[in-house]
Image (cartoon, rainbow, N blue to C red; front, side, top):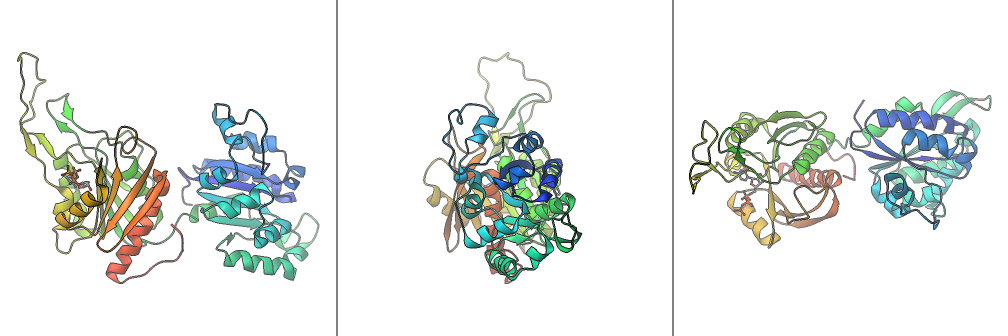
Length: 419
Ligand code: CTP
C-alpha cells in the first residue's frame, strides 16, 4: 500500500447504511499518514453522528454550505477548521474521497450541483476527486445511475468499486461500498501519476555546512522543505529517487533513497557517485559558494583582536553535472531578491540547464516558509506557479518537468491529466 504521509484527504460522507464504515475509514486514512477533514451531508447524519467522525478525525465536521454562525474564526485549530468555507476546503484538499457515495449524490455530482457543501467542494476543487458508490443493486443497475456514472467518469472523477455481495437490504449484487482498507489503497494511488515511471531522479536539498573549526561553520537559512517535497513528488510520480541532503531537521521522505552530507564538497562527491545513472537532476540545495580555505582542527580561541577568514570557491555541483556527456535533464533553482526572470535566464544559459525554477527570497518568504511560488524559465517558455504549499508546488513542478523531459526525449508516459 502507498503512503498518505503529508496528504490532506477531505472525506465526504453521504446518506447510506455504509456510512457506519466511514469512522473506520477515517482511522485507517490517518494511520496511513493522512490528515483528514470530514464533510457530511444532511442525510449522512441520519446514519452516523458528526461527533463520531469529529472524534476519529480530530477536527470538527463540516456540514453547512453557508455558515455565518459566531465564533467560527476563533483561534485554535478546531475553530479555524470549522470556519473554512467551501473554497478554503476545496483548496485545502490534496484529494477528495466521497465514501459512501449514494445514488442521489452521484446524480448531484453528474449535474454539477453546488447547493450543498459537499457538491460545491467537488465542483470547486482542483484536487483529484474519487467516489465510492454504495447502494441497493437495483439502484446501481438503473440506467439513470449508469448514465450519471458515465458523466462523472468523463469529468475525470474516479469511481472506486462498488463491490458485489449480500446487501443490507437482503438482496445480492453489485452496490456494496468497498472495504475501508481497499479504499485507503486506492486513495494512495490517486497520487501516483506514473509520469516518471522507470526514471531515476537525483535531487539535492538543504543548506551545506562549511566547517570553520570543529564547532563552527558557515551555512544558510535553507530548511530543505522544498527539496524534500520535490523528492517526494518525484517518488509519487513513479521515479527512483536519490536525495542528497545537507543538514536539515526533516525526516527522510518516504520511498526515497536519502544520502546525508554536510559540506558542498561532500555533496559534490555523493552527487557524482550517482549522476551518471540519473535521467533528471534537480538542484534544489542552497550550496555554499565558498568554504574556509582551512578548517581549524581545534576550536579557535578568541585571542586575536581581528580574525580574517580566508575563503575559497566550492565546486558548482549543478554546472558539473550539466557538463557530463550525456547529461541528465537539468533543473536548477535560483533564489533571488530581484530581477527574477533575468537572473534565472542568465543561470539557464551559463550553466547549460533545461529549466530554472526561480523563487523570490526575502525575510518572510522562501527558505523557512511552508508556502512558495515559482517562475519556471525554460529555453522556449515561461510558466508561473502561484503561491501554494511547498507540497503542492513540488507536485506541479514535477508535472512540468515530466512534460518537458518527455518532449525533449520524445517519450510519452502521460497517463493522467493533472499533477
Ligand atoms: N548550485 C550548485 N553548486 C553550487 C552552487 C549552486 O549545485 N556550488 C546550484 C543550486 O543547487 C541551485 C543553483 O545552482 O540549483 C543556484 O545557482 P547559483 O548560481 O549558485 O545561485 P546563487 O548562489 O544565487 O548565484 P549568484 O549569487 O551568482 O546569483
